[in-house]
Length: 194
Image 1: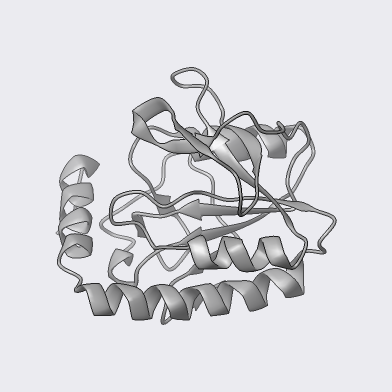
Image 2: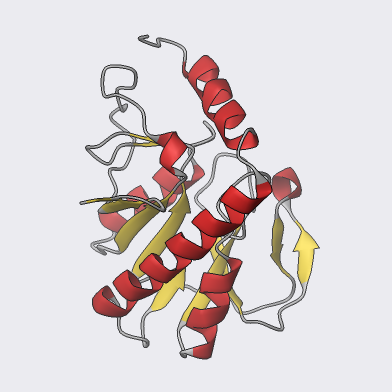
């Protein structure tokens, strides 16, 4: 099935996520967090900060990964949306950080340090993805704008997309737009696309 309007494709992918059982979600999250920790330790030294996300809805639960990274001394930033259609800003997170409700009802760190430089690594939620590492998000473009800005500024953070196995879509069903940012790795519980 070829899509010209990606809203239907997004709906199909959300339905696939919703159909996952609680034990499957837990097992897949545990598997992915272990794989991600190993990859991150290979690619990013602890003095670099990591732009991450706090899972919402049916996204992969990476909170155990974030806690492990925090214990290992990595600095973690979680996103904040200050204005509609702007790049994301990232505020420091640690295991004892309190949250407030931000734009789109997304939890974000409350009164924490703002990162002003680019991260060494980006963990981005992925709704759908192709084997060529094109990412389909929720359609608002925040991660694309943010990654593009860092790249335009001469930074090259290592970008890892986090998804369920069920997010895989065929290249014929999704064609990335010119503004869409290709990721370095797509990581799922069963696969690593490099």
